[in-house]
Image 1: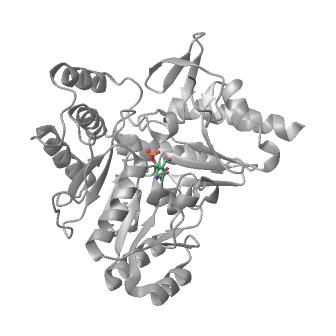
Image 2 (image 1 turned 30 degrees about the vertical axis):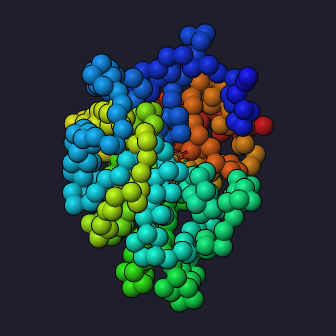
Image 3 (image 1 turned 90 degrees about the vertical axis):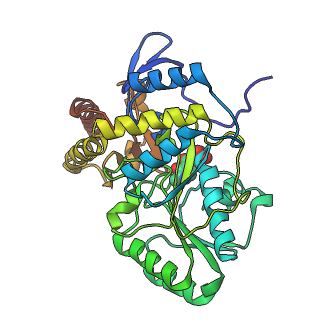
Length: 381
Ligand SMILES: Cc1ncc(COP(=O)(O)O)c(C=O)c1O
């Protein structure tokens, strides 16, 4: 047997990691500004994280949701505090897709409706309903196709008003990434997020903020949605939550009443996953990582904006998209192979920065000088 070949991979075998540095099998060090796709939030092998998981594993790693699991309550309390949503409830699962799947289902249980509004270039995951709300037909299998999802242009207020005028009481939920990740680091406007809030209130539809990539402190506030000044009814999260330990969750407004059996999971909320998530939140909180994400992110954005050849710099905090002209398409690969700097990408020519929230100004400078070198070389050709 061999792995099912679904990923285009870089020929690099990472065997060791610490903070924002990873090493390959030959001992070469790389600067990690990709964080394994926005997952490494507090840095690789953070000592507090390793200690907490190890201690938990030595006591108990797993028991099912059929018994008391006090660490779930501790996690809910801390997450409520750090996110500023103390009156919301927490449902734990294992991934971003699952979080969105559960959010969409909960919305539909709540208002007994079927239609979902999603937006162009959205990415919400690969499970059945999450993928149906994802604007990429190439990953939607025939069995996932549904007429329940209506796609609208991103940030188009008139189209949104029109959709509510047409479908009105049929709309169960609106799902949106406040900053689209896979879509190329595109921000929802504050006016657009506020309009979603007011239309959802008017029609009793549920506002779901997909914070799987843009949330968990990455933008300098806990949820990227917080910049709009309005709350969502359900926040979904995953990537940064476990710093690599698989865990996802939804944060649920008090207007939803839980009923036994409506949502459920075997692995979600197990002791070990909760210990990982506790360690992450403790470090984010104690080390003031949201403030660091804001400061280093703003420094990067300001410096990138000074480079004339860049088409556009987008994003907030440490979720940054650098759009390059087509002729600079090789730069991301050069950064990896020549400078040993991991970055992410989005089609067609966007470099995505999704590093740990505790990167330093020195890490930022290392990237900036490598990028400038490649741009200078490309211009000279
Ligand atoms: C915004 C967003 N939502 C959902 C998902 C799906 O998360 P997962 O891969 O953990 O299922 C992703 C993954 O990239 C994402 O970026």
